[in-house]
Image 1 (cartoon, helix red, strand yellow):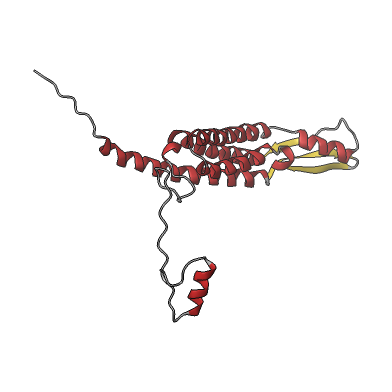
Image 2: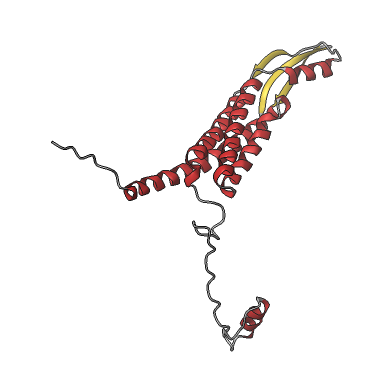
Amino acid sequence: MEYVTAVPHPRSEAPGSARAGRLSLALALLSGAAGAAVALLATRQRWSEGTAAVAGGSFPLTAKGSDVTGVPAALAIVGLAALVAVFAVRRAGRVLVAALLALSGAGTVAAALLGASDSSALDEQAARVSGDTAATVQSLTHTAWPYAAAVGGALILLAGLLALRYGKVWPGMSGRYERNGAPRPRRAARPADPDRPEEIWKALDRGEDPTGA
């Protein structure tokens, strides 16, 4: 008794592959752009606060994310640039840019989590306002904004992983050339209307024969 193994036809797999490519492209664009926006916004917010002991009492101190570390914002910008550059390159170049996008996201996550417990920015402020170089911040507390920056980095990382997995089926930035690399034929110029002088002048400016001959 013979058994026949069904072999899927290549054409039957094409629609599914194209659908996955479109979905992954939309998700990568959304997650990458949103992640960069969230990370940049979070670094402008208050990450930590505390007090410094001064003569007559205590002095309140606050530190924004950019005061604690500039790494998340810088990597978010790099990730956003890499997200755009993915569509400007092909083949090996696209893989390298996608890897850079993923690394930018991972670096943003790591830097944000490290900054969530950092006190050096407030220690410097405490030493400055108290006049004592050995002074440190007191009553130190942290907000949730560092973790918001980490979430933004995770979204950038997701965009990079999607680009690494599905980037080979994504379209390029320029639509001038067909898939086989041949330039698309230009449409034939429409003859200028002799009753409309402005069309004749426009045709001459383009270097075309206004008669269409």
